[in-house]
View (cartoon, one colour):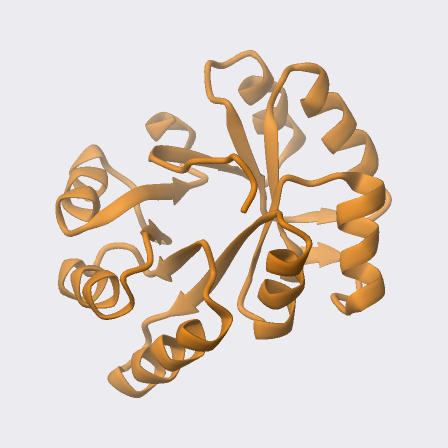
Length: 181
């Protein structure tokens, strides 16, 4: 695994305005949620000039096919520090390449949670991101059942939401809500 340790509030950016704001912040890490493949090299290169670690949500990069070649491009050419994905093959490739691998799972019902827990036992991601991150019992259950650090994401809008997720067993939370950064 990469030398990236995740804790506290992790800023997730959707706009270049937020990107510029984060470069000037004390946050060591930023998560790119939504961009085009053509923009990604410049974004990552610029962030690295500010000594930032960059994680990308591979499934949300427009124009990127997330297969072996797409992952090779992200890792060897773009030089991302980690990836987030719902796809087992992406997590496996990230692990093999020794970058941070975060398995995103959606807690939409108990069946989805059970299937995702089984999936994480196979892929063994470094972290699991649970969405929505405002369901404390599910965060606790997934952390307990997998013994993999859990990140809470999605629908986190207040400091109370942050504290509730962290108190439920999440090691960190992801949010695009700039007020929480």
